[in-house]
Figure 1 (spheres, rainbow, N blue to C red):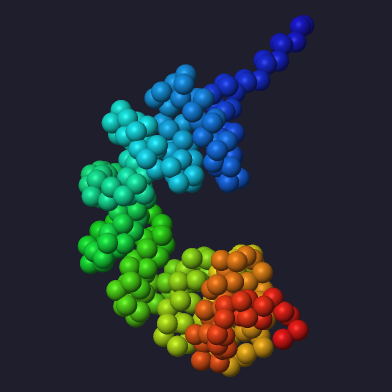
Figure 2 (cartoon, rainbow, N blue to C red):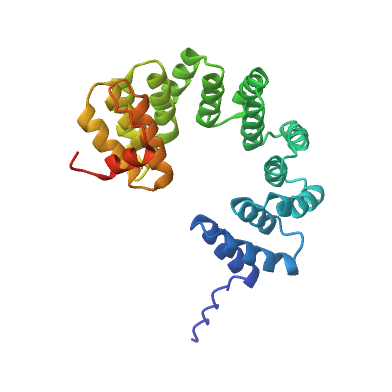
Length: 283
């Protein structure tokens, strides 16, 4: 009895392979490569929604929002895809067309079923223009639709921070951490609330937890150094700020500011002297 021949494994199409590589390039922070691959797919299939998404994200990562608007707008009109519409709104806002961005997001958030990233983006843009109450109402209206509410709670918490409502912000971030104790953005946000409130010891503990998750984050290390200085732990605070400053010149500026602003810090008349102090581990 003859054996049935094994069927040959199905090979991925060139377009799918190119999109997979483009997505990988985005994840590896190579937006120029992602742009090239996605544009190649679109030459043969102008209606490929995934390729347009990748192209739009790649252009936004390269600070070229004006170039992203046209392909995203055409795709949004053809497909009505809420993710494309949200990317389009992000490109419009980045290009300074804020009113058009908000109008687009209002249309997208009116869709059913709801697309929650559009709610988050609209709330972010409303918050940037000081429309905090509207952003809160919007996010609260999305809560009943969310299967995972943590993203909305974190976004709500940030809006409340901007309104200087630390009580509500603290409550929301604490709720998130009660169910997701390793959530980095909630840890950092709650630490910020505590630091603003003068609870530097508790804030420092939260920053340490955040650094255990992302140990190479120099901004969090700077914030930890500020808290340590405010607690009177001067040697530890200065050592932490030195470690943050080694990440680059931009972070050194933040570390110098932290040294000068802290009640137990140091003040330097010349930035060059402060920079030399931060570079010198023997001080």
